[in-house]
Image (tube, rainbow over all chains, first blue to last red; front, side, top):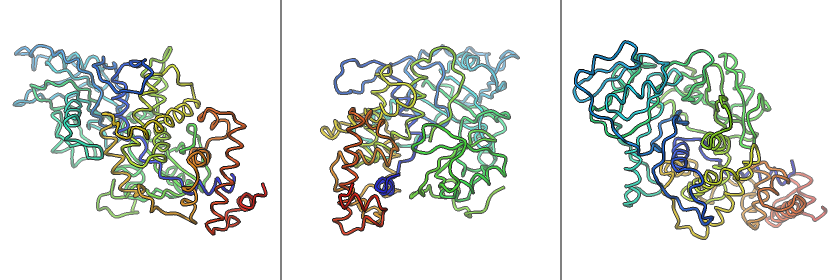
Length: 316
Length: 197
């Protein structure tokens, strides 16, 4: 590398947070409009119109708020007597508790269309999928996309009540996982996989729930290497060398692949003296790690995944 | 970071799948690109939204493979140039992204000019023309070679080489005139500053 180029490389501004929830939302927002909608050739004007939803959502790794189209043709009200009369072959088990349906997934591997039709029979416009997840993602909502919430945010922006740079207000979702407030919060994972949905839920939603990944299955929640239950939980791994991180991962039976900001794809190895920036577990035995020749100036604070925890003491 | 992708494609890709692959592969790089060339998180979010919206609308124009990245850089470059003329244009997209980038910028403290500046290089770099900065950045920050830069900028490879040489020379001289010893950065930097090459 030319001396001057090396100098310039030394002052490279931080690349930003990478693929985030907001990035996934942006994807959904963009693709909610049919492609080639604008052929005027003029300056891009962002317009919205309802679009048919994709049959199967792509981003399922993290909760997102956007993108589901308004095709809320709600089915009629559930017929009395339906509850409890579901056929033995049903993929979902539905009970009513007060003003909520408690919907347990009986068949974790059913076709999503089967879930959808059973939910439609309840008058719910919800598309549900059950996806392989890491330990922490089992029984959790991996993805919730609600059209009503997106409309709400757009309204806030239009009315000037939500401005650029402000935090998006967090609203308690109407759909929750079963026992989200009880056993799940203290447990490594929820043993029951299912949803609680208000019986009068009128929004249209797309939801992914996590189930335990089978051997070799790719996670859909991609936990950070420092997330709870993962190899570097409560350990500062950013700016460790590639060699150090590789050794630790291999000790735990994890095979890393590598990438860098200038990389055209993944590669099986990078120089051992490079610095690790961050990484994700892509399955129980594989990880994808970002490394660069220069140290990360602004590593993610340890507290993000280890609130108040003691640093540098591995959890397992 | 490049995100995982499924390899279960059958038949020709549908537009959303193709766009998803482009987005997944190139979002982090494009985020870095626009962040390095914008002053505010809002500008970065706008540029990302507009660039990817353009890619979605003109999906057939986006080349396959690695060339898609260069196409996105070129598009983002034009978006940023337009954005600077109409800084008040804001999209309604990317609400959460805007917030995330603002928080990130606050956390990293990289929004202001008072960042860490080893050896005064940043200040010398800032004094270069925008064109010089862009060339040097495409090499050193995005890791592109002359041919790739030619694609992004829409000019010939020979022109890129020549302009790059001049840009390096001007930076070496800026360092020299700021009282920084280019020799400290290597013999080639010193030679450039002295006009020997």
